[in-house]
Image (tube, rainbow, N blue to C red; front, side):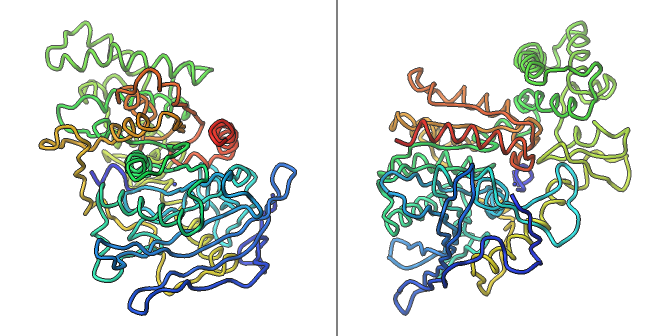
Length: 508
């Protein structure tokens, strides 16, 4: 399971002088806490952002909030960065809580790459040149629509267990959900935001967390206006490549076709990608699914017909597909598609390519998107925290905690708790949307994402049993990018436009 999710204007070099968003007032430090407990800390600075012809003045708060156990003793210190528009009426100003996934990933990727007031400037679909890296004022920020609160999960970033607790105590589906629920309630109370329009925005496993959180928060009396899922995985059965489970091969095929299209492996290459993928979806859910369901009973004539179409859609040879029994494993696909060019394609973003020691392997040695981006994001984040937000704690910032290896995947959603199977939180989302029929859902998908394929997301949401009266509450967006949609600036621009409409329609 840990293998599935490893895992996200004027440019000024960070190494040069005072940043563009320098603090205008001294930071306020440290909230009161009992002497025998850790302290909540904060650094408050003030900034402005020119966005769409208007200047937004905002306050940035980098700090920690304490969570407490059932004995009212602090057991975790959660790091967050909040961006709030100055002078806005809290009763009408939306607030959005954002986080990445993993499980075990810090929220640096959404924070520094997507809809915050600044973003790291990186090369598109290739490696970024060496430091110094640059920050740009983010012209696609959501700060004109909502306040933003970026949260690091416990054991990642600067968040950590305190007192008698250990980070691993929070590493589980329900444990993690309860911690985030408590944090959000604590933030709402501390900042007087209970009556604000409220949103969640998670990426990757963060979408798993959001589905669970939407229900936990609802049960705790927190009604959400909307949930934004970026590169979703809710039903892990769609990505569980166990022998005998053919569903993942079906739900991955349209993404393979999109990647083959991008790398010009389809002859002829379709001119219209969305129209082409509609055709592939129909084949995947129809002829291809029927063929796989027959298993070893599949007759030779049908097999030959499916084989020919599968090759045409995937860009892989009929010989290779015959040897793989019509089933394409994602890591094999990443190695095989561009083997003739001596490169592999990425998992998080298949637009990126990498070079292995040789071309004979079955799977790539590394994920190029992940490797190429860690350095720029990490360096830019640390410089931004110190130079702009005036926050520099005496501890390391943990990009990835590898929590998936120790993650407790058990979750009781009310159905068959005695036989858990693979994790599926779609039922939690259905319950939340049913209990709060005004809550809306926006689902963002990258065509070239091989970590959380878009057809798997479509399959999950169309199988969660949502009442017909509520199906109009779900919107989809599709972008010419990968798992971290915002890495491709045209895709980020389109995402911002779609989300702006979403907020306008859901925040009264």
